[in-house]
Image (tube, rainbow, N blue to C red; front, side, top):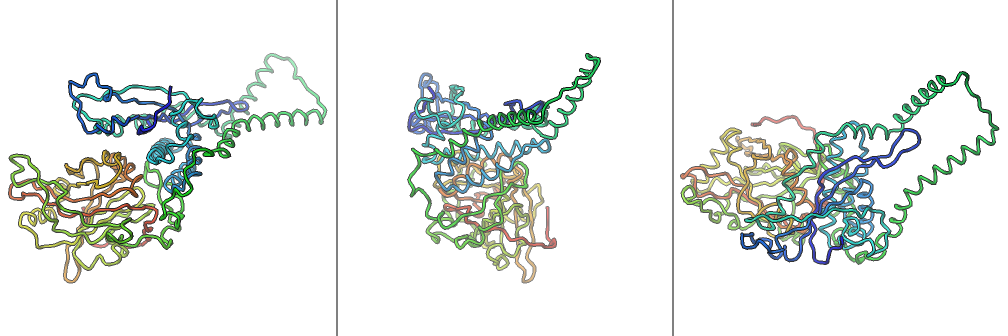
Length: 568
């Protein structure tokens, strides 16, 4: 019985993608579909209550250490149907963006690997948005799409395959539910391998789908058939027919073909006319901040393997568009704003760390946050400090340390005032970092994110906030350091190129779906590797509150010459 009781949490991912033939068309042409194999992890209330508990040897027979995984197959068109249905019940802008992006995929022979990779990311992102929304997840359409209801529980108004496979996974001794789910999401990803080397059969199926290829092959087949007939007959046969009889045959063939094509569209017509007629959420289910804005859907991103980018349309012109920099908390009703977090929430290396490995709460950050920008753009900007619009045009008023995150959909930038009045050990760490080369800086720069408030899945993706990440291990970094001279202030910019890291983009996709419910603190740490440099101190930090990406401004386009400065 595929029915799932109430109270379960669903975690989804796309395991692999396939190209499958569905039907023959006319003489040689075929119909083929892109099919996604989707895996679901079903977590009960008992799993969530004890999610931090680690399994030990005495828990051998405890059922709470068994997690059910289900696998379903859905075509590309069926995913589009689900998104269209979901958007009829709620104005979910991010979901609309994914739908518009997916509609642009043509799956041609050229660039097939890239299109399939992007489609997998779009489907994963869409399913994550839907399953994290209680109102959408509780609808008949979503339940039947994910195979969570029996076919007799509701009327079969959705033509989705009910076939699925089920498997019980065991949590290993020493692991918790949290660790297991995180590994299930980010480890053992086989879909990339399946996309990296596409079978030749896929290209053949897509070639036969083309009307031009079909016409050429049909003509060639008729030509060969004519020659074969000539080999077995001594004379050619001539068939005469009255014009009205020939027209009647053509008309009958057209009528049969037309009605055959309508059979496949009737399912879609039934869905669009009946969808959500029972379990649609209340009409008041809509964020009051969304009512005033209707952003333009995203276009396809130019960055490789990305799901989409914001169109430079009406967002920046909306009266509710956010300013540069973002408001400081508690302005803007405490939403889409930033603040300076308590430095004690960050644990760093203590004075005796090299001996006992003990971490302690950090002291006050010497660099105070000046502001935060979130710019939307098709092409994330490197060396963004060159642009006159950043930080509301006030960047050059102080010596500033900048951390610029290049995201698939824009630039997230944090600005910090450089304070020369700091403890001696912190000053030594900063000066060595400032004057060091690329290798030295890459080996020292760390990021420590801490989720203050947010969904459980985001906390698992980001981590517990106790161990900082050495950025250069998985993300390329670039430095644009320009020391001050005369009246010109010093600008020290670090570019964190998220778009070039598969792991970082995977975590970002989880976080991006929940930014409106998220409060997260980010701190930058320069590693203290010697006894003289200890205790370690957070260099700078900022905190984001309930960021609404739909209201963020578009990055203006500038055409600037390269300015002099150190580029490593």
